[in-house]
Length: 449
Image (cartoon, rainbow, N blue to C red):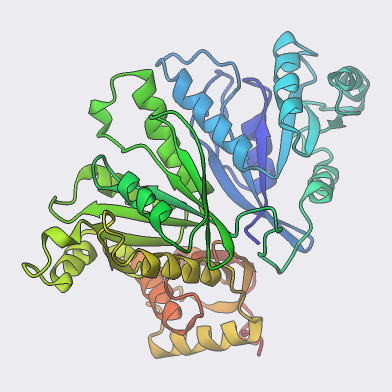
């Protein structure tokens, strides 16, 4: 399964970023007494006992941003809450229970996700009695902590771990849930809706359409080879300077949200048009979210016989060199040409994203790659990998314990990931590679067999 996520939420200035840094073990988020410093979501991998999870720092709910970015900040908060498996609702013991705390509690209660109520700034035992007033929010007794004075960190981590979803090796959905969610994205007029219409026309597919507005994402539920799937038809994305209204703003963000919620993304291009900045922005989003993807060159009937597919394929590879693992499909959505092959390939990518490699096999491969071309020495310090393990799927997530992650150059990191990919069972999907200092430099340590 993918790594569980824990979102830290609350009103401004209750110490969310301080708790984020405290749990992360290093200063990643800016901490300031001025409300509204945190705007974008920050994430960090945390290990507690035998579990890994990600923590997400979010902006303050209810902030009036000085740069009029309230909508953007609220959108990032909403995304963090949506993606999270567990919520850390942080309140300020020194300020006491406020009306905004109560509003936030009502909002989080309606979401219904596992929640840990954290009363921060309990810098001494005398403050813990005052923290009990937050039980009125309806989430039970709060956990009194102090990020500043490092009080009750172990108890907080234990509480988080107790609310995480149970680890599972299976990625199989329940019979009532779709096997796979496919997001169909691209700029305007590349043929996304026509492609969805071709799904409806396939004789082996049973389709029921869940309606949305013309500017919203539309989910089309269908069956392929007796498997239930959902195709998410997204609004065409515009250039940022072309977004003039709230409707355009939300249409743009719904397209990006669909990427995050998808199991596989079909990135559409019009074969008669050049790659645009909008295309690059969408591909950056797909890559940043580690989503399995297929580059879909649509309307190929218009160029059939005039241009070889290899020429367009080279064009895509040169435009997106960091996504060289992404397969390319040439289709005609209007006639349904190659649509079935495209969907079969999407299913194969989805299965790849759920593969879990054995630790021994992974470490044997790592040793081969490192011996084939050892990493360069930075100054007097040489990078040394002790062992690797796969800690998650969707995306496949590999952690390498090493002596000093900072000594590994970006170019060698790309080489390492590319060469590893050749020997892995998920060669066409993105791999999340995490380097973690092991705080040891014992020559006797080596990857386990």
